Length: 440
Image: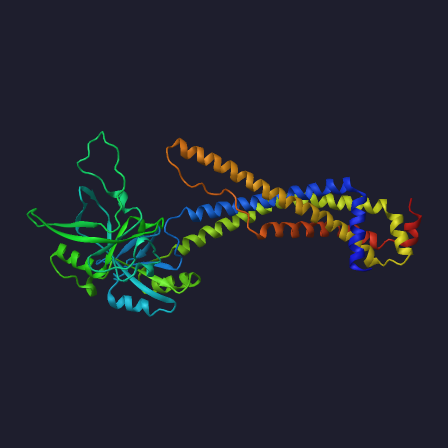
């Protein structure tokens, strides 16, 4: 029997009992729709959880901090358990060189924060901010991009984050006046005043004029509220505040950013850095934990939906058993004119698979539609809640249907149909032709 003849015969047989096939396929459809909807819900929750985290856009970065040990030794609490105190391991230039030599490390970027009291002025407006120096000449090396101006650092230049202008206020503003509009900082001169105090409480000030060379694009992280300068300039400012030069071999740096060659090896590089006695944190570990949790959730959701498919499988087996009983004489005739056991088996297995396929296609469409409806109602609800609280925000999708999910659901439903029809089909294939012809 040719394959095309087999397909035509299967379609014709299913068409003879449209009502029964449709009712059986509806069971498969409901189960498939449940699988698609629940797995889409799990995928949507996973995406919402990862996108709601701040500062995880660069999964190849590792934040490295010094380890401060106790001079007296003894025990300390780490992660809820007692461990022996370790000697201090600082981020000295020699230790940074060790990090740079580790396999998989692309570059190491030193970050140092301004530790002096500051006042920032723009005309009559005042502000505050997180001012830091970095050891790169271009912030593109930190995966930062400019919405205005440049990302290149230089002496007397400062590059500000997307939200820095929101920190400006008018100290002479009357209480009955509304909030000021955030100023456009691009190209403006900021007067940065450093302040230090002596033991008698006397105050010393020094003011620097810094030109805003660029405004960064929004990152939804620390960079949005930070101002960047060269590391050498920040070091000079900190030394002025302390009144002495800083010995980095004795004091080290506050932190460094380690860029791995790819996100796939970040955790391995972090383990190597931890082996040097330093503290290493990477967003990759958090994202990996979230993905593992939600992958498990999707499996559980899919299993709940698969229970409906199991019930539908029983329906397919019942339908095929009844069909064989009704068509016993027909089977006998087909065998009498030359049909083999394999031909009979293929026909009935094809019919069972066809019911599963039809239910799978319908269930995938129904599940996809249900996911879209959930998103519409979710977006409407979140928008109303945001409006009631007086702000507008982006509404995240409640469900996300991966491209592979409908295909998987159709294939899985077809296999369920195939397995469900296996026992009835074997019974049909092994009927004795003479007995089948005599069957009433």
